Amino acid sequence: YEGQKVQLWHPSPLKQRFDRVIESQMNADGGRLVLQNNWVIDGETIGRARWQINAHSAKDDYRAIDLTFTLRAVAGPIKLQGKQNARKGYGGLCIRTSPALAKGRLLTNTGSLKKDAVKQRFHWADIASDEQGLAVLAHPSNPNSPPPWLLRNSYGGILNPEWPGLKKVTLKPGEPVTLRYRVIVHRGNFDQKQLNALYADWAGGQSEAGDR
Image (cartoon, rainbow, N blue to C red; front, side):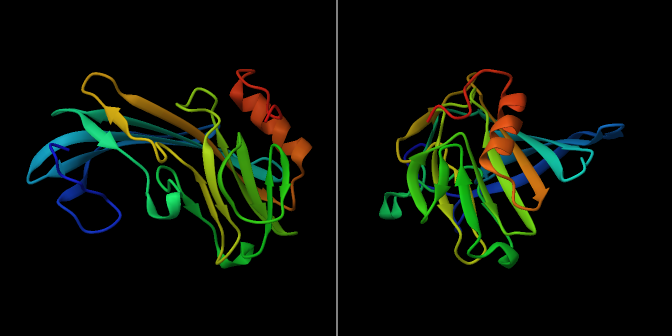
């Protein structure tokens, strides 16, 4: 931003500050929380991140949690780029799972993975043991869909559908970017057919779950 290279992961002039809760409610389907954070440099708000979280009521063997992030530049263009170290593109939504899933099975819409994945494109990815698992589904309306992923089952596991990735993206005032994801927390070891069906139902026919 204005020639400064800043980040939120390590200490830098850029800070993320809570702004306000926009909505908080419970209903028959679960709960909904909408809040806004500001990106601040030296007291100036340069961008805003709106987070919408919808936690749906649990089914027999899983619960769905919808995450919608809307990013806005407000003071001028902001160039965003994922982590360049080892050309992983690390950035955006990143879920680190628990030690209970260390060395768990990695499954995607293209099938099982025998090792960690870097920069491979999937619609969804899942890490699971025989008892439990967690899947992240990336909506086909997201920029650069299907996204490249960083997937690991070491030290608990990482599910990271990267955005913006290695290529710089400019966030311009008046041109917000919205990213949509669904997290599936499930009992047991869901198979590819089950997760493809859940993805297709959620994505609304915008993309074929098994086309890549």
